[in-house]
Length: 244
View 1 (tube, rainbow, N blue to C red):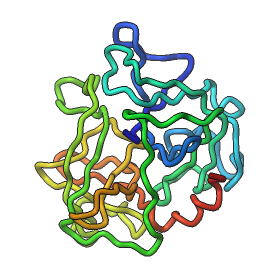
View 2: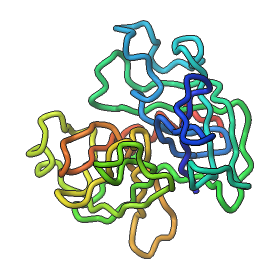
View 3: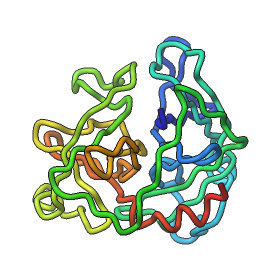
View 4: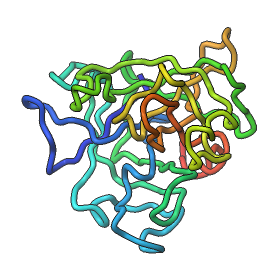
């Protein structure tokens, strides 16, 4: 599975003996992940403190290091397939504090990971591809599944979400713009707590290859759609900066 979770190396919140993730991410190659910029950005820094399109070490601008955990399906216990790798650097597409559009960052691991049955990469879609309204995609994560249980799900969950047109989605929030993808609806959302996680779609029903089309970004009131930063417009930028 291409889903990863990002964990603070210190100041970790724990359930039993295992840390909770603070954000999700998607594996796109042996050494690179895609996540939301707001997950790996110091929001107290304003303006040009964090350079745009430059590799940055998290410990240089955050108060902690970041570890990526891949291959696990539960936060309650370690699995044989689980890999933990220190995040070496991150690159933000967006500059500044207000990341309402292009809320996407590339995460570089300190070493390449070996693919196995539980750890596989997801593809980056063509830059010109647009998902039609009604297309079925899947959001995966440990997000909140019950409003009465704010700690989220202890196991990885999948949620099938239909694509919603931007015209309809803007009726839920004026923050929705052309750089977003909306999915779900009043009774079918991606859930809260899944920031940085992916929206995975196939190009056609008979195509078995999955693509990362969105990164969970803006939180809207529930019930309502989940808003994702759109990946296709940034596909060329991602390919340019991923040297694999």
